[in-house]
Image (cartoon, rainbow, N blue to C red; front, top):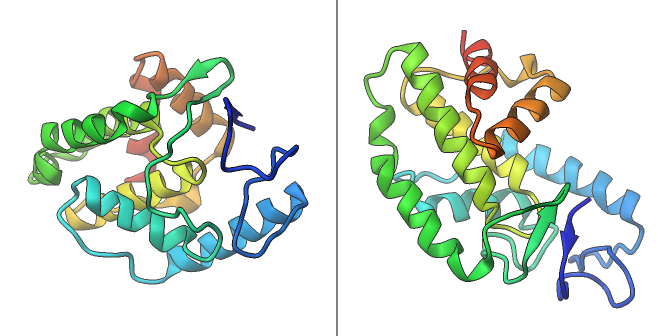
Length: 190
């Protein structure tokens, strides 16, 4: 569960996010979100040059059936577990800076597997800290790095993902420790 301050995305008096189907039960909304985003992830993902706009198109593709704001940066401050994500007024700048740093994906080209895993871990850790969307960041992140892996010759095998250790690695990356995430990604790309 995310902490949000003055959350215009939720139904009044609720923590349930406003959605296209007007589902008011949080358990039902989560189940629908997972089901539809999983189905959308099995479709061809939008092509692009691994810039911020491409990432937004990935999020829109996955969540277009759930939220009217799919693919649009959040406008509210959020945190999880006491850790604040990038303030909304800086999201666009930070996303562009991150994608520029990784040369819109070209930094991943022609890398050995170990180097690739380290670079993707750094990218993913930064992307997670920005957390540009109100919901659906984790699924969008995996879809995006999955596309990066396919494109640059190191496909990820997400069926091997161990949720608990991967989540712990993502949390560690938020604190600047990327070794656990590098290990997890290397294991998924073997």
